[in-house]
Image (cartoon, rainbow, N blue to C red; front, side):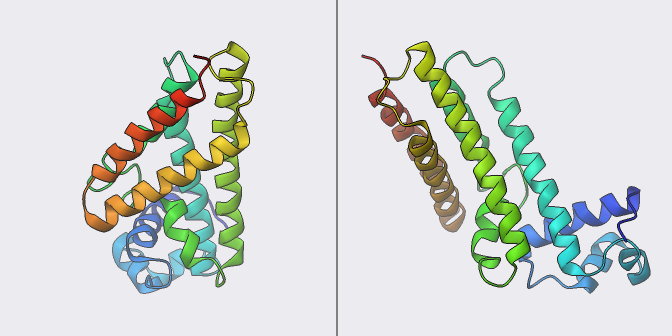
Length: 197
């Protein structure tokens, strides 16, 4: 029973932190009880089980990232500026990512691959929506004459997002944001190669 109230939102918010920092499999209902200071009954009145909580938490994670992407491109004039602004959302992936623990897409990609198909589907849809968003920006760049007509928006968007995720992963792995900076630097070079010179 999904009784949506302040307690429901508290459970989602605190659980997202645990799932994104500890991992879903390493997080127990007791951990959620401890971090929310709620009894078990308050949790189970709103969620069937831990997986139900995880699905709701990562749906919220997707909406948070989507909001960051929308806000990042505000006031940006060119497609290149918009794409670089999106890349800079994780400029401080090590110390200050949009969601504590890093990118939820990246964190769940491996953990949910074969053990949690429902979550994998949610995150797959979220990635596809991000790809379509970036692809639309690239298409705008083609329409405006910024990018050459030979540019393939879908392929380029896929590459951009994949390289961003890799940079986030290596930055968090090494606790060094230089990988994010390098990715942005070469992203600019890549985008310039598609412009109408």
